[in-house]
Image 1: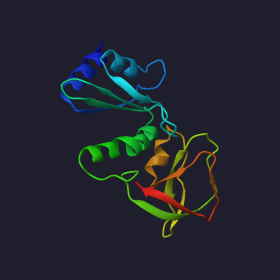
Image 2: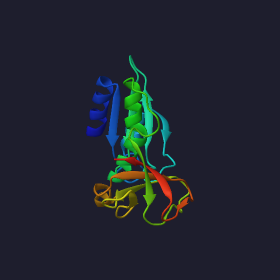
Image 3: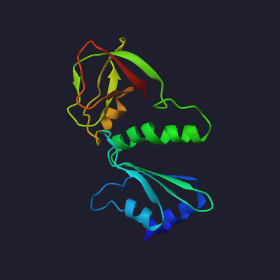
Image 4: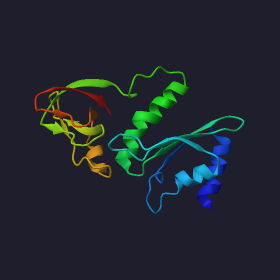
Amino acid sequence: VELRRTLGEVLETHDMVVIAGGVSVGERDFVKETLASLGVVSDFWRVRVKPGKPFLFGHRKGEETTYVFGLPGNPVSAFVTWHLFVGPAMARWSGRAVEGLDLSQIQAIAGCRIENPSDRPHYVRMRHEPGTGVLIPAGLQRSDALFGLSQSQALVRLAAGQVVEEGEVLFAWRI
């Protein structure tokens, strides 16, 4: 009841709404159905990204259209989907040109073998080896592993099934 009331008020007074958590399929994930009951049409739900699969984008028509972004509840997933989808959308809607991630891209060397056995792209959190141009994975790469994210200085996108060998050049986004 409180969620419905709060979301209803926000949808009436804002052009864009960003929600963190509650958009997946767990027992306590009520956001998607609550938004639907308030007239929000889900343009897409779930994306082929790791971490960040339970991401929602929708809109509600009224006097003005309100756009809704539903970020996953896990902190690393929320961070990655913010940078992939929300940040670039906000930049574009505010008149800035956007090319891919709204972050500066860097070239580095893989400090170890990195592989993505998943069937979807994986954004690996990386840290710089001090005094070198080498990047290595920062801690655990799970969507709930906030410590690894806190130690990261870059994101590297690995395509589904991609393997990067130690010493290979890779491109990353500075975070």
